[in-house]
Length: 81
Picture 1 (cartoon, one colour):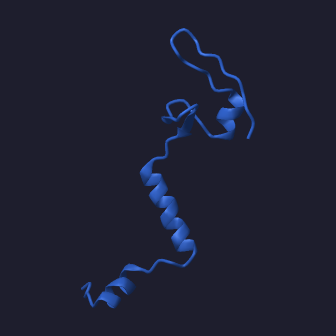
Picture 2: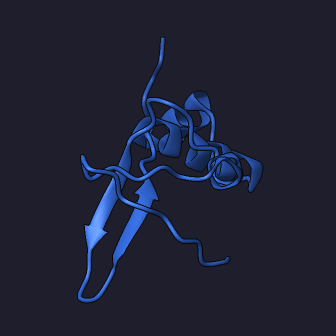
Picture 3: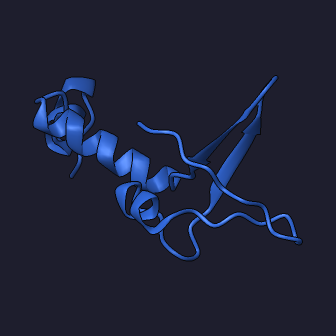
């Protein structure tokens, strides 16, 4: 991670350098969150919560931590028919 210098224009806007946008996969229309701290602020790319859930579910499946519907129903004594 490196420090970069940005200028604020007359409307209070800053432009993120192209290299930074590419490295962080920031595209036009993306939402960013700005968190104010004591002597600085943190700018983070917003993550779609549904995308985060899908990635978490895929990770759990790949780690063998999930069970199929039929197996779960059987363990709970539920008849699916």
